[in-house]
Length: 346
Image 1 (cartoon, rainbow, N blue to C red):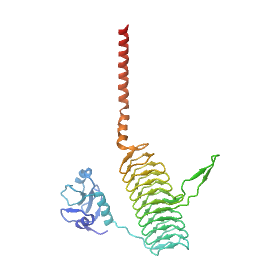
Image 2 (cartoon, rainbow, N blue to C red):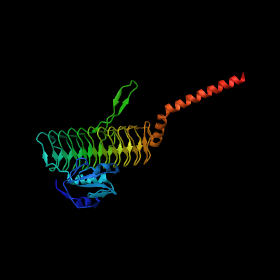
Image 3 (cartoon, one colour):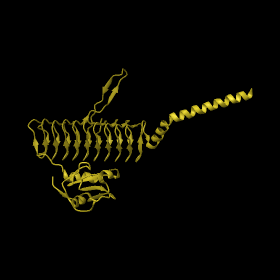
Image 4 (cartoon, helix red, strand yellow):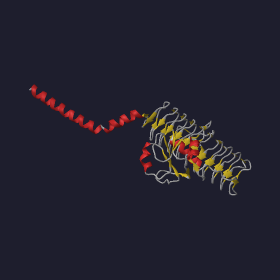
């Protein structure tokens, strides 16, 4: 790892250097940074901690004040990702087909690819340049893996799937499972409906550990460019995820859900089949969607509704004991008035 001048880093991240142009050796959090390190202050909540940090310089938001050198940027978190790539650039494994791997003679594997121990690559599969199948990876028949994609141990990409360039598929993910489709007769017997589509994944897509993506019933399940999927997510058959969608851990999408560009689904969100989640929409954690979500909206709850309505309801629910006491008091007063009226009538 090479040392870097702050001025070099500022140019790379589009920031403004204020103070001395120091040479830094690493990037570390505020609490463990040393004098030769660059640390980061992502927002004003970290200001107090920065005062006690031993870091030699800070990557920070605009307007941050310090007696040490700073690199001011518009988006510290985005700039931090670039800085980490500067200090810790991705390195590619040397090309290899490990002797324990099982490769079909009808598979096409680039001589620049890495196929690690105990991988299986079936007939008609295509593995492009700089692909890394780390170990124990299964690639099914006629499946395509694009350039620079990394697939970690025990991942399974079944037949007739397509994975784009520079994707990351974490350990235990399964892509191209049979969709959950059954027909039921008058006796209640369930018969499986063959799922004859595939899965199409774009470029720069990240798939988390133990996530499952089902193949389409007739046409492909589609995951477009730059989608980021966390661990333990279920994406059912025929779903479409447009560019830059984010699905956080334990999201469950039923069949034929359409998630539009830049939408975010937080943890444990469940989505009914055939719904559309609008462009730039946000679904907050543990929500259950029973109807479409408009573009740009934020919803929450079960069933999900606009988050402002949800919090109004929560405030009312928290006030129920107080409201109950007031109602009882009013009822007592009404009874007293009734008794008073009756006594006057007599």
